[in-house]
Length: 520
Image 1: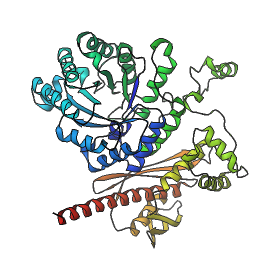
Image 2: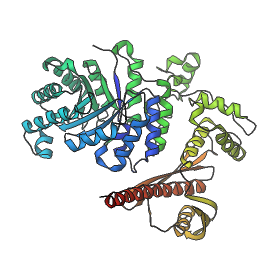
Image 3: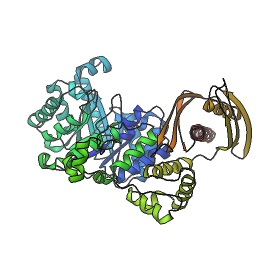
Image 4: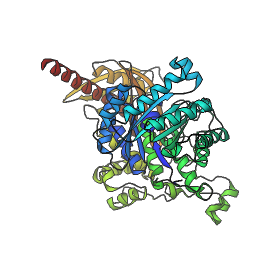
């Protein structure tokens, strides 16, 4: 049996389903390219039939990504499968992933069919998908609760129909590791054509066992793990990519398998996904949490000073976290910034040095000392602002004290025009938002607002994350500055520009539809 475990990343499909606001095409491309650099084998880029936006995202990722196979998800329905094929056909090689429920509770209560009907649908779906590609994956949804006889039967028939990968999901995170490993073991013992397909697993974390179940499955013979960066996903999330990868690397002596993951890219990819998805990583998260390589106990610190392996089973450098903290000030030159970014794992083409350096100097003048987290925060802010050209805050002034109201004035640019407005609010941020709302010609509602600290020390950067609702859709905005009011304003503008981009896409589609009708 092959001792390589294929890593199938579904951050952009299952992971995105858990977000409060959808990612833009640009953001999805950023994540896809980061996952590609991470060394992931398969990228499940989305569910093309679900919306025109998802179709476009999958197509753009398929055009861009070259070193990972791009995959699209479909139900066992011809229209879904055809949408996958249409979106992915721009790639030289691609995978269609089709699925249907197999557990009694799903078959009877959700699908309201007989198992024989579901089996026939699965066989037809796999055969239809093989018309477009030789790389077809079939999933038995809710396999963890499927009667084993039915599961063996379905797996055998799907392989016979042409599926080259069979996925066994623990869809609701119900099974225990010994149970789930036993299911995989039984399939290998009872399905006669099992050697003709790769066995994959897709585990959810409802009981906190997604990674444990995935590893148990690998020990039983599975050779593909479906996972997400930071473990994001439906409900309690999916198996965490970084945890699964580092378990396989750290315990290779016991497991006897390996992956193609570039482990030094883990921390950087985790930060990017956390930032763009507006999903902070908990400090005690394994591998990538802020405390993952932190030692507070005096006994632990003493041991670490003598030998790091007394309390570290892996080094922070092995996942791309640097122990070194350079004191960067306004006296630091460009070469120091470039060196520091290289140490953090960024390549020259990941950022514009001149822009980053100018923003660094402004920040260094404000707070004196700049830290590694500050540099990464500045980089994220530059990437965010690259697409924020239609709406801009030219100037703002906020007055707030112990009185009942705060007052804000704003000079606000909309395209080539500039509006000036002032307003009062229950606090400085509310006053600023009310002033900006006077400058725009549509109504939006703030659904969620969070302010946090980024960087080191009491003068770290203020980070504002905002979710607004417009026409029953949610949009995420992000801002960062030494002043939390300024960061909050940036976040509001970021969300407005996300809405503007959505309007532009809608207008383009409507125009194309009109042109199509005119040409009939």
